[in-house]
Image (tube, rainbow, N blue to C red; front, side, top):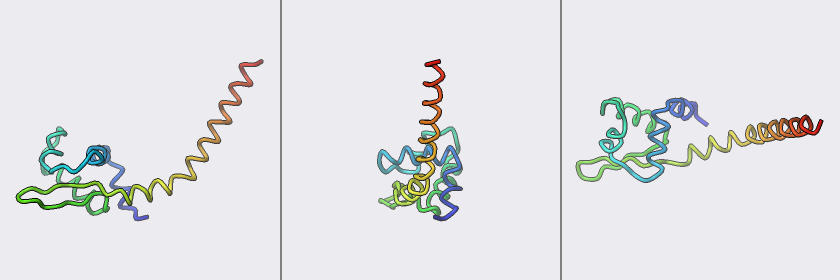
Length: 104
């Protein structure tokens, strides 16, 4: 999995853009209106997401619609899956420890 996906996901603004796009395609203007950032700043975030293949843009007339691309996110999820099992086991162990402590 390319590092540019992780770099793109490192920004809270870019993660929020992805959350918004999960509800459906949006224009750059619509996306920019949801942030207290300039349109050029939002455009730069969209560029990073596009380069990481997390979004694609589609020109429709004079507007450009942005769409979420889920494949890179599925790859991240698959990569994280073994760690999820690790943390579930750790939390289960902690819960058992707390239950045993309460019984004393």
